[in-house]
Image 1 (cartoon, rainbow, N blue to C red):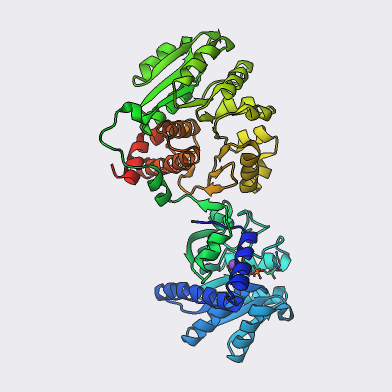
Image 2: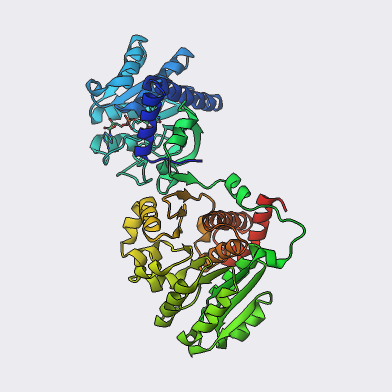
Length: 517
Ligand SMILES: NC(=O)C1=CN([C@@H]2O[C@H](COP(=O)(O)OP(=O)(O)OC[C@H]3O[C@@H](n4cnc5c(N)ncnc54)[C@H](O)[C@@H]3O)[C@@H](O)[C@H]2O)[C@H](O)CC1
Ligand SMILES: [K+]
């Protein structure tokens, strides 16, 4: 499913109106009717059937006027309150306002704090409050009057339904501009906005429903919208059912360079996840002093003990051995628990120069690239980088807060500039491709914010790549399945005690649920 930012939504509007000659007032009518449908559903559930619609001066407010008219026609007790001077109303919103005035509905403007206080008193007698203050046109922080209005709405204790997006949430990023309405439900018009999906904006509505308002499907296709939600259907098409006449070689040979003294656990988690995501064979290159530990804990994998620089750390002398094994593999992953050393940087340089297979870079491999991003120019094959926000901040030397505020743009620019697939991990992981495509994942939960969770994801990406799944699809499927397995674990044991190992345990069950066997 496509996701749009504020600008793309406006473009879509223009296409519908200019190319397909659909007048804006028709789109507004459809929007208002879609909102009316959802209000009527809630009215069935409410004792108090009185509806209060709070409108801004833009088209979001216009949607509210249309809904008010439809409710009025159905005999529902409805009041409309407009924040701001109605002299500023124009276009389709003004037309719908004029109709409401003719119908002699209860419609008043709010111009000062006294009016907001009056509204607060009236809300005490309402059943449902409709937030039609602002939609994709939010273009600045809330001033004093808006702040007070939003405060009054948020503390009224009534059922709140927002039109398109809770007012105060930026449609393009999901950031909150000062303050925002906290809705029980949002009726999203035509396509989800980034602000409906990304945090913190996604937290400002308990649920959302996307309603078609009549923008032609081909108009959506033509606008080459580059942001999509990862859906179960998408993953079902990526992870095919297995054929019977196959052997382990069909499911690929994975190779991992990982682990260092005190960090064999990270390597272990990655290795287990490689197998649990279906890879046929796995070799793991580790410092030789850790070999016995790994041998005992990972019976299915073949270990490749490397002579070490110092106890427990991979040294440069191992390059030939690493490259030799790499050439016999279908994918190589570097980084989980490797430790950050100059040697690792040299190992990476050689791998980049020699590899013709996909490369997965995580954790300390990413830290080694920080301030040396130019090394990525040596790549001859596709690399999948899996930084969390902190690793990304080190990688591109930008503060974490700035990345949080603009994840999609930053991920997209990085992937296009360095021609890599970027998995920017976090709540609502963002995946960006060298072609400028962006995907947002909605599986997963806060219980997964635990040590080793990223190592598991690296293993899943590596395992899917080993099976010959194309790099972008492997990244999408891995992120989706990682979250789905984490969600299964949270259902079983809750979020507090959830450990990375629980994600590995649930992974095969989550895959079976999608693939069917
Ligand atoms: N194709 C569609 O999706 C359609 C969507 N519709 C609705 O139209 C809005 C977007 O309308 P627009 O007029 O561009 O913007 P808003 O109504 O969101 O504008 C808000 C309004 O408020 C002003 N404003 C913005 N920020 C602030 C602030 N912090 N303080 C005070 N005032 C502010 C701004 O200047 C505007 O005047 C979309 O979300 C849908 O709901 C159409 O109805 C049909 C087609
Ligand atoms: K709104």
